[in-house]
Image 1 (cartoon, one colour):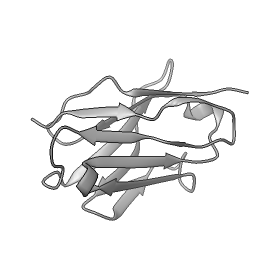
Image 2: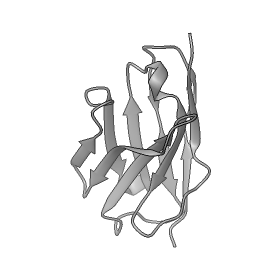
Image 3: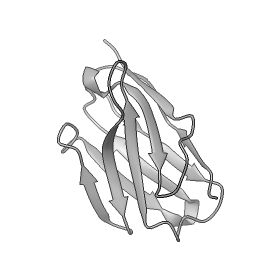
Image 4: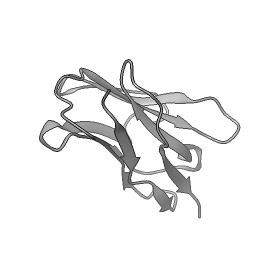
Length: 112
């Protein structure tokens, strides 16, 4: 089973940016799809972005235009780039693939 570690979260002001990372313990070339979810306080976990294959991406409406997800197979890493962050973007962000397990996630805090 491939293990992933999320990182890159932190405290940002509204309008700021973060690049999150999901780094695997081994090659991710065999993993066709990677999804990023977030769990906001008092809300259900929701899918934020997904990358399928190398370049096909999908985004939830709330982040569309502000989020770009990419992957670097050589570094075994998936990167969601979050721009123009808003208060509603706060939460714990997780990466996961089909058949995978939820990790600790990385916390994103948006505060003025």
